[in-house]
Image (cartoon, rainbow, N blue to C red; front, side, top):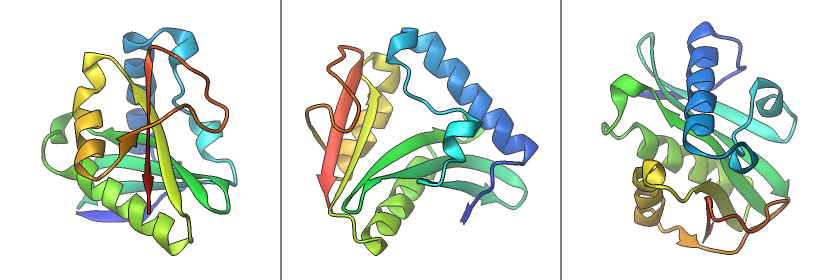
Length: 151
């Protein structure tokens, strides 16, 4: 598996992000969907990576700088044909390493609180993330779970 910084122009990447947004709106009320579209992922404070095996897209993830010491994980997604193969864990470890290299002291995320998001929450727990209060621009939402990790 190779993880590379991505410019968000490839057809496979765009299709994966469209699938991601469709799933988020299918599983959460619109006001509780915090997934970013292409425009949001192309902002200067964002870094976006994709995971590949040869020419096959395995998944993606992004890191948003909230401030000089705090980053946020965004757009973690594994391609449907590659779930439960370690793609998300590899991407999460890659993002954690990038955050450490930037000197961040904390890495946080928002994910859903519903059963659909349980595998994601379990992965974050496995890698040392704990539940926290809403951070940055987020507010209390019964459909969201907020997690953070000191790094």
